[in-house]
Image (cartoon, rainbow, N blue to C red; front, side, top):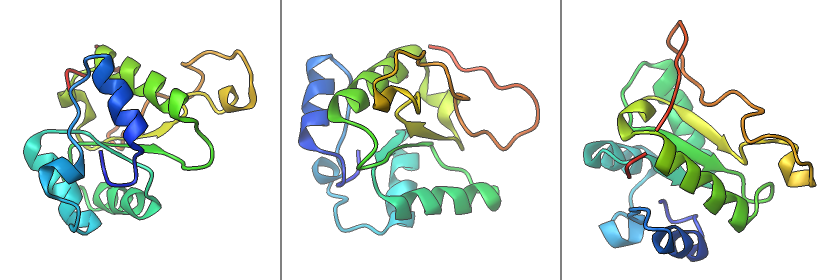
Length: 142
């Protein structure tokens, strides 16, 4: 979790027994986006962020075919703490770390859900994957 993620998200995920590490706990608070993403990659952790600059860093790495461990981006104004927790818990229990290499995901999972719709969690494509061919994702032991 980068420094932009609310403590309530981290606490709620830990109550659900999801293994999370914050940038603060890792001593990575002062790192620039490139270094923070590199640190997450070295640790084999998907980086959860609400920082658009970090999202741009991930996009740059995708364009340049540079490896990174994956990014989950939650827009600060378009997703609630509860939605972030719900989506991250599902992702953490339904996928593996290895599946996230070089991928970027956006929360909330359903664009309509944030407006009160009862649409399915699976309404949008799962992750951005620049490689050709089908890429299915299933069970994140974070």
